[in-house]
Image 1 (cartoon, rainbow, N blue to C red):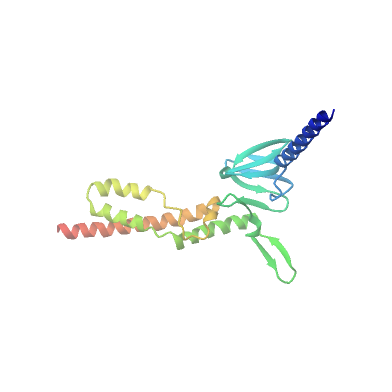
Image 2 (image 1 turned 60 degrees about the vertical axis):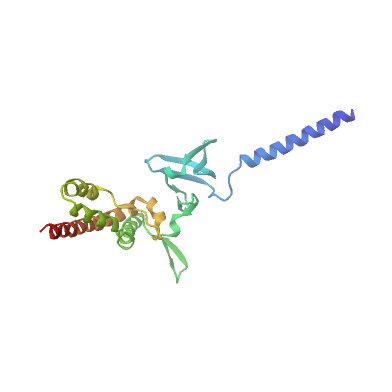
Length: 217
């Protein structure tokens, strides 16, 4: 009888521990924003009435209609909640996007959010200005020079390829690299970087062509 009681006690302990582990496993990560959220994917898909559950390596786990689902963090455009909008940083952590587009009224102590239309224009302008600061296009200028210096192959093959290639968007010196996740910022950056790149390509090509002509004449 005593052995039976010991066995039952052990089983109860194991069951209790298992229940605690299950409760921990199937509980929401308290570091994530609570409440219902709208998850907007980069392909336009909208996941409504979702509850952010857990962040794993490159994966967002969310609960919807009593079931757990997952999505690649790289596919998430933004997460909208009643209090704020959230975006993912490069390290896959969530950032309150409204914190960057808000200003404080020093006399009233009230935070007022800037309208979305202004936010988009602001991000586009920020990308455009950052391209002016951090994109130098030195590689494009060098490529253009050698294209102009080499007749035939350089003039008719290398030059069109270099001109049509998209400018390099990544620059380690750019403090706003995380904004490359925003389509308006990317559009503004690409616009100005393309202008600078083409100017460098044709400038390098002209210098290469002049150098070539000076050598043969």
